[in-house]
Amino acid sequence: MRQEPSAQSATPDPLNRGQFSDGKRNYTVRASSADVPDSFQVHAGDNQMDIVVVVSGLVSWNLRATWGDGWRSASAEWKSWFKDQAFIVFYNGRPPVAGNARVANA
Image (cartoon, rainbow, N blue to C red; front, top):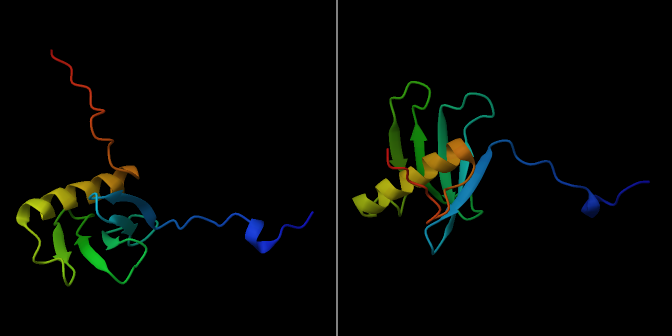
């Protein structure tokens, strides 16, 4: 039986790694390539033109963050938090859920 185009499931974009939020906006993390990416970018919402940050040097571990227009003036504390969230999503697909961490005392 033939499916209508709207009923067909779309193939997920292999470059999209996931999303996270700062409570006000959603951000999407996108790899530079499907295989061994050397960088990733984070853009605001679904607008790939609103680049928040590009992190390059993943393969060499010579990391460099380049902030997009309108995001350079953010506080150092917010930028640090933002990069941490972006790395977690890049490597794991999603940020950890707040309050669900277990700590073991040895």
